Length: 423
Image (cartoon, rainbow, N blue to C red):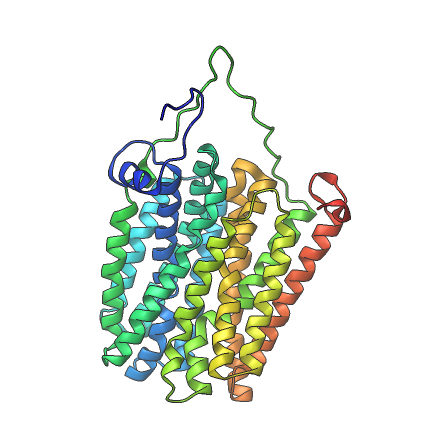
């Protein structure tokens, strides 16, 4: 069938992968989105969250205590904060930053398998946190910018399936490792090899040139809408605060879910499966974002997602059974990166091509929330003997974040249109 001049067809996923992943040509939209997905699967799913299913194995091996495991998690989140702050104050080449951070993630995952003790592990987890923040900021900004240039911005939600993919892979793998009586260091080594394969898949995509701008026949270049002016106004600070509350709200579940489940249901085979269930929820939620058009108010979407996640966190505290943990895992997982995707969309709406700076600020707030979670949980477990109190506090933080978005939607309407007038 003959194509009409002036119209660009949407390339298939297979064509994008072959042209984007295997050549130096401009990567198509599917290749860009899939590169973002794989990058976040490596940096977040492995670099950050492989620790969650491996922690019970490390506890069983006697290599760490719960307090030491909490310290490893906290140092990783401090590293995430440092990485976010680094992104705020430097203006590097995004492609070099993403590639370098992904290489570092693989190396540090392998380092966790080597003898070294707590001092070395604390250093490796801190550096892994820095690397994951760099990938989150620069891979997200690069992919969203490139997808906008390719006229496929809604595919940006697909890359946020990445953490879910990584969580499912590491969670299911760890379940098999436990059944096979593996040591935790074997698990770290396996995930390092997997990370190296993932790195090889995306390396060339991030080096692909930008698409050429096509000028209509006989005319001048298309007129672009004026870029928004970046400013640290009330709307920016409200968005940043709410995003920080999301970091605190989910992190206790994301750090200790298998430990919480084992404590509530000793000996249950299900205890190690709730983490991959959460990961499956992450993938589904991120995919559904790609089906939501860009015309929706991001604040309205986030208030719903925060509320859903608050319910999920709370369910684990009040209904510690197989059904309760399964429901909790799904309700925490579905909004996990979906709300991140909408937050990144909102950052791009407010700051345009300078969005990477706002994303860095938001990521720093998110990291501060994460840092506060594990020490609070450890302290409350020591006082109460369980995780219910810390889960209740986390759920409350998410509800507060939802209320901030309700206020933003009503008091700071997009384009000056009153909130109640929107469809």
